[in-house]
Length: 174
Image 1 (cartoon, rainbow, N blue to C red):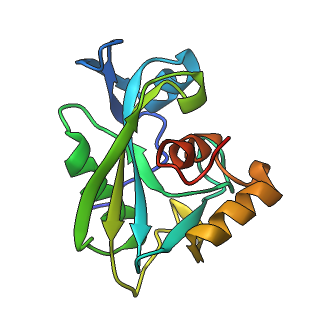
Image 2 (cartoon, helix red, strand yellow; image 1 turned 90 degrees about the vertical axis):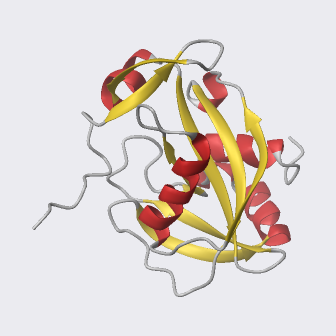
């Protein structure tokens, strides 16, 4: 029997990149986060209808922003491309295969993104969802308008990197 992966393993190897977002090596997750090294991630807004999407509260076991709301997302491993990571993350976190995946844009690495170069996607998926408890504490289905209201009511409930993503795709203004 193959042991299940530890999605919060501080020794998980992540792809490191240079300031031009070119892969230049690998290092453990903990070291990358502690030293603020440049690396890659994906964010995926998973929709179940034209305007209704899933938000998820991060597991209390997460090393960054535990119990904060965000979208599907994750780091890229060495040699992994962004689109493959997006498909993988949807399946790992929500337990479903996406029906469609569209590229929306990207964020450059900065303090605001946790030194991550992030590519943002929109996916379509259908329930039932089986959230991975190692990654997700809870999921909620919200309309885009409800999400904007929730964020305006209490930004501190959300991962600050997710807020950057929402700004990048035009759902939030500031």
